[in-house]
Length: 232
Length: 232
Image 1: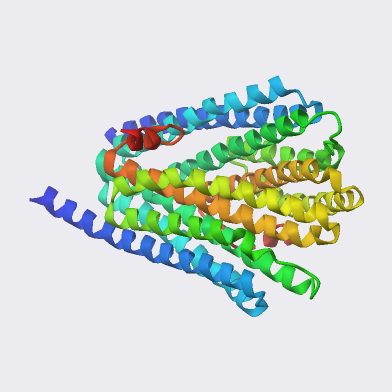
Image 2: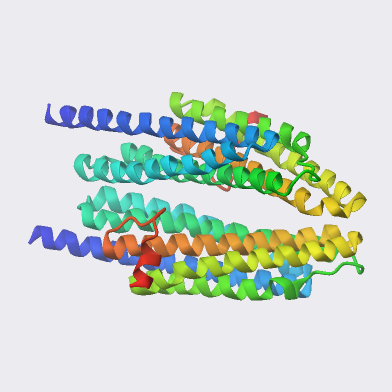
């Protein structure tokens, strides 16, 4: 009975952590969406708001890491249970980095806006890839919430799409820069935005890999496991 | 006695993990150095070698994460000891990302080289910042090896220098691109190299923060702790 009790306590503690991770996930998801809106509109106040909100994400990272440590010390989980905690710790790191990338988008939005009237922000260029990466992030959080390894496998494949879109954005921007060298600075700002979006896709992929680790117990990082599953 | 024995076993297991982390650190350090040499020389075979060697880094990441999990399950460390394991898990992630960044430098070296005779690689532009980031990485690994929090605090301040050098590289490259738009593509390749170097500085800073966490028990991420210590 004592074993069962302790395991129930473990489950409850873990559930608390999982809810907080999803809260953090929701936060970085809105941060990313808001950053893209600020980038489109050039609204400096909104960009500043996003940069400021990164504090909340950072605080959640620190307190969640701490909660995971406490859980391990208090509940001394066995190998299977520990796997979930370890993967959760990694997910937290990726979410924090997504927050950082959204902050970078907000900073670029400000830089472009403050450079004045003559600048082009090339929003249309990155719109599609932002939608793809945003969907990846959303699906990754959803897969984490429902422990859905099938969805995780599907979204890992989408990272190649975002990478492809990134290269297309870059080619477009190079064309712009060559045609009108005066737009080089603002085109580079947009290139940093595109790079940040591409990185958000990478982090969403990482989260999906950790979901597969939790559900299937397989560490598929650096393998073609997801592609092989889809090909089956 | 049993407690002491188990604690000794824990220390031995932890020491094995720490040595392996330092091995991984040495590997990514050479990877970074080699990537910069390949970038300077445009040697495609060497660049390919670096890209291939990333497999070893990835394998070390997976096996070290596994070793850390085993240590926790087998030794059930108390809060203080667990702190070291948790920080080590985070250090491993940063080392793996440094490997990724060096791979990106190697890919850019290939791209520039394969683009043919007319390209400029702007190596001189990034030489200084590569030296700064390389020193940060070296000092971070050294601080981790010797658990030297003072050194960790010092090197965190150096990240601002690398960031400053990055912005200077970017301004230089923009000037080049505006003067001769035909060099835009190769200038962008160099810009990605500079970005990768800047990221390596960030990861070295992260490692230093984890060293401080291990030694002082303070989670100083997202704070001005290091700057305040230096000002004292």
